[in-house]
Length: 595
Image (cartoon, rainbow, N blue to C red; front, side):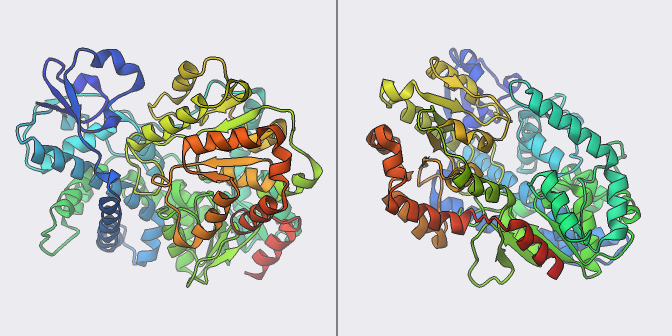
């Protein structure tokens, strides 16, 4: 039997029985290719909750072990003596993104070969292997088939199997990717303004590095709000623009990379740990080896004066120069402040980014929640949510408007272990949405506007599926922030537990949250809040129950939503997870100046 590991049909043996490693091997528009193929699909190992949590814990141990040993090696090759915290800030996000998907692949392959010992497959030849530039390029590559084929091919060889190989062009993307169904005039003008600001970035950052003792990076707020903080603080807090530096042309240093094979001096008995170390020379990003000194020099020229504090929400993961800036300043005593940037933080049972962010920061500013036993976490009002809460009293929603159904989507390949739909579970997530919409009465369904995730589809063809199943419904392809459209609707239906749901609740528009309790696990501290949401009918775990609720309240949404009980529960939830204040600017400036 032939084993197919990805959706690249050029690497399938179509005249043989095929075992597909997982649902990620199918693209929606490949249905005709499968018609004449006799095939099976392997079960997904992480549908078992016990196996899922054990895998996460195991990967965390591997992460700490590798980080410790990589710290020693990177200090040696860069001729520095930085702390482990320094390298955790810089390589930690990539290491987490690398270990967990690779372990997922390893376990899936191990299961397949154990159940079907005579499997054969076609691998990518080493001539086609590529090395990611940084975490951003790695994330893009690892969401697509060619680079995943490279990783599967490396694993198969390192697991001791000899398979035929074939060349294939695996391209590195170094530019920003534009998604969706075309840009609106608003988006076009917004991007033009961003491009203009980008040209001023080096000049502005140099000024900030000399004038201000506190630097504020990417905050997931309007540029205008960042400028307000700067002015109200008397220029003591300076907004730095995203630091961009192209290192894609740097040559690979194979000698340095071979040294990665020896980062662990002791004998290793763990088979996966042995394998992952052997994959590092090819897959360790350029930014942390060949490009690190270039980034350090650039940052040191821009930010020459001492810095007392650096605050940021987004740059901690994808902006390599910013991470180097933060790590360098932290080594000299600067405070690092991380601001929450996603709605699942503080709520999801497993959110891998959150522990990393808290561990490297001196303070973590949340959207209202606290963390038991962790004094670093401090509730602070979110600027955008604060404006939405203000509109709650200024601007009513449309009682005669349509209904908005908001959908999300996730990568086909596991990105990391987290309590959201992962890998093949995305199909179940989509099917539950389809089931909900199908079972609505014609009267209500015709008023439904469907908004798929507007930026990426990861090969699931989410928009196409909605179009084919519901041809009479309007599909909103806009990339404009959805909170700017709340006033147009009478009811917002969220299918994922992330920022949009929190914003809708803060805006105080009638809102329903329809999620599977198996795909969206809630952490213990948050469970009481979600039990209350379920009790008053805001939260529903099954599509059929959601249909019943919509039919029940539709004719008088205001009576249900405005009831004392519902509003009391909503306000309690919002204050803890979507905190906003009309005095948000003063609160932020006072706190940043105090730091």
